[in-house]
Amino acid sequence: MNHEKAGGEVRPWLKRYDPEVPASLDYPEAPIYDLFRETVRKRPGSRALVFFGKPVGYGELGRLAESAAHALGKAGIGRGDRVALLLPNCPQFVIAYYGILMAGATVVPVNPLSTETELLHIFRDGEVKAVIALDLLAGKLESVRDRCREAGEFHLLANTYYTSLKEFMPFPLSLLYPLKQKLPPGARERLSGGGRLTSLLKERPGAFTPPGVDVHKDTAVLIYTGGTTGRPKGVMLSHYNLVVNAMQCAAWGSIAPEDSILAVLPIFHGFGMSVCMNAVVMKGGACILLPRYEVGDLLKSLGRYRPTLFAGVPTMYNGLINHPEFKKHDLTSLRGCFVGAAALAPEIKRRFEDLTGSSLMEGFGLTEAVTAICCNPYRGVNKTGSIGIPFSDVVIKIRELEGDRELPPGEVGELVIKAPDVMLGYYNRPDETAEALREGWLHTGDMGYMDEEGYFYIVDRKKDMIITGGFNVYPREVEDVLYQHPAVNEASVIGVPDQHRGEMVKAYVTLKEGCSAVPEDIISFCREHLLPYKVPRSVEVRGELPKSAIGKILKKTLREQEPQ
Image: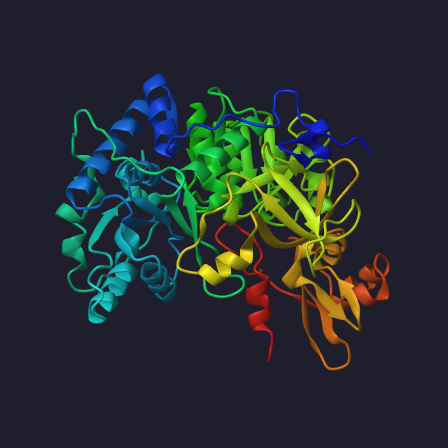
């Protein structure tokens, strides 16, 4: 095996890099907003954003972000203060994101669909001083604000600003969101006047100079994980982390000013934030924003706006290829399609590539490293079932579960990562930080292996492994077989308690439109493709499966729904 070295580490994957991707990149010692401002300076007349057909140029985007930064500073928000964003994909998110960072503050991106309990936890844990939110969320948000006041937590949500999607839409909002809301006392007053984001954007700072930040130590983004192993915890990402990951993603996908990406992935999530926003903006491309995922709308938008790039999760690609009007839309503008955040079934990859003629590049990432840090090459060898090879300056090793011994190719162990985009740590959680970050290595909790050429494969999450009758079963292997069943649309496998075996393999599936199947049929199909101990003992057919904001099927929710 011909290993190559870089930075003192053995990296067999370097031979598989595309010619234009270097083993190491030169990262500027600058905050992420400096890269944004440089693009604004170079390309003021170019499209930065497209929202329902309405473009926003870089010059306008830069002015609005500076106005927001200046106004936030006048309101007493500065270095280290945390400002939450409760917004879907819309121009206001991008404006506020860079505006908050230019004010020296920390962005706390939050899923707008979070419950009051979830919001209260994030606001308290992250000590959020201000929030910029969609006005449709005013009822829920003002209720949370009142609960903070009742508890004497007056430092939380001291400033609240609302905005509406209609402010940047070329047609009435009611055509898209015919929603009504009930507002608590006083909320209507806060929805007008100084409580509007538009009041911040009216500021004209003139020659604006952002306050200084420490790019290595200051938290630029405090992003909360999905809480798959408990209550969500805040991941602290520095400006340098964000710069590094954006540059890695841009280099890997050869992103250029001529490119455009369709962003239906939420940009309040690390995947969408870095791949669909920071990396594209840094290179001066255009970001086409969709505020919600609906497979029909996504399909029409891909045909209408003709982006050159798209990034999604497996459920999105599965939804596209199974849509009855898929073949009616021209997707030939796409030069690159990336997939991550969850395991991609080989059957979905095969069908998408057969139907579109394009290559679907599976990758891997985690919030603790901003997002993607590994992917199949854009031009090189694309291995089905593999998450690809590490990005520039990223080292991945496979270590045994008990101990730190590095395992040879082909052996399954835990993926550990060393990279310049690895988080500062978990906010106010020193013990969990120490557990995740050990001697410069991030322990991911993901089980996998490396092949002889340096390509990595995820077997499953360590916590998701099922032990039945003394045998180890990795849910992903069973799910890959389920996706081959002609009637199965989506599938998820978990272990449930069993008196005799310790755990029992249970599968949840949804069916394709117009198809029918009973659990016995699906179990019989699995018997033809799996060893007996891996075959699901139980199959539950559902109308839909619980998903996260980015479309990842939630095994945690499925476990919670099981009878105790």
